[in-house]
Image 1 (cartoon, rainbow, N blue to C red):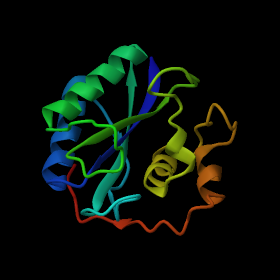
Image 2 (cartoon, rainbow, N blue to C red):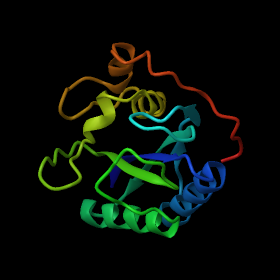
Image 3 (cartoon, helix red, strand yellow):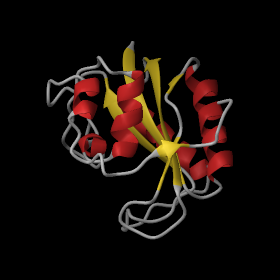
Length: 163
């Protein structure tokens, strides 16, 4: 069994898409550990505010299959991927950590390189897994958040309850 963490975000029909994605993840993998949901302005483009949270789960699913299933779930929610990654999206599911795996080749590096760059990933991740060690930095996630240089990236609690 491997412990994985997935970032969930949306800025298009965000409440509906977040609720639906969490329900689909639960249906597929069972028990989830969910962070609080945060709202934040988009980074790198103009658009509606995002809702973001992180889900933790345990799985036997191989990493390649997990990535495929997350991409299929995004597509089922109307997500289309293009060359520009700084656009509004119905659903964004990013595999942040897959146990202590370090996989740098391919289009989905693990650990996700944005963990250390964006508060909307690191803060909720550190809240549900503060003692988990980042496999590249060898620092626990709680410490990474306490030393996070981007704390000027404003997040606030989203009015989304009952996930």
